[in-house]
Image (cartoon, rainbow, N blue to C red):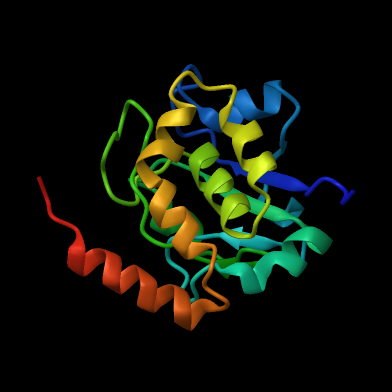
Length: 176
């Protein structure tokens, strides 16, 4: 049995605490919260939507060794926070649909919990991914609306393959 992945969330304190998925994950003991970027693990994979390298199965070993980091801040301030020098190796997730009630069905507007679960799923840690979202009433919805994409993304061996899969998805995506 493999050891649990270390998950750390940088919490900028910019969201409504009642709706914050990072705080709920912390209350359930599923993540460690830090409030300073310098406290992030040095060699972990950082989920950063502004990264030019796509997250893929190639990142699994680094995640298992050094951990997975999410940056929890409001979308309005995200670029400012994420363009700072963030410790770790930045990766962006492929395009997925939000399953949360606030941004339901919107491309890439994932909560911190959804982003972490997506990353775990893509590298084959599906049980851990489901566990993270199981504490949310809407958690199953994220997997239901992204099931096919997550399975396909999980087959991408590296960032280049992930980008190709994502482009194919975007070409077939119809805005309703």
